[in-house]
Image (cartoon, rainbow, N blue to C red):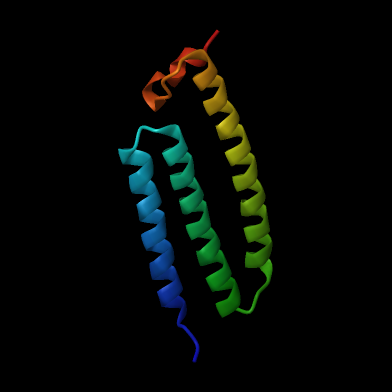
Length: 101
């Protein structure tokens, strides 16, 4: 039994829009970082689904690239959150402008 590509794309779209909602609705930077990771994983799922459907390995290579970017984004994002938390004990996205100067 083989699963159709449209099912993977539908799941990818649902995951992506959950991530978009997490970025728009939440103000906690850790939740926003997790929502961005969810959006990147949704893109990875779509890339792998289309790569497998078209019997082309280019999608798998792009997935490795996206995973690398996601790891760098998580490391830099967590470093910024720690820097903000050291300065002010309240971490809020609207108050991140406090990192200036």
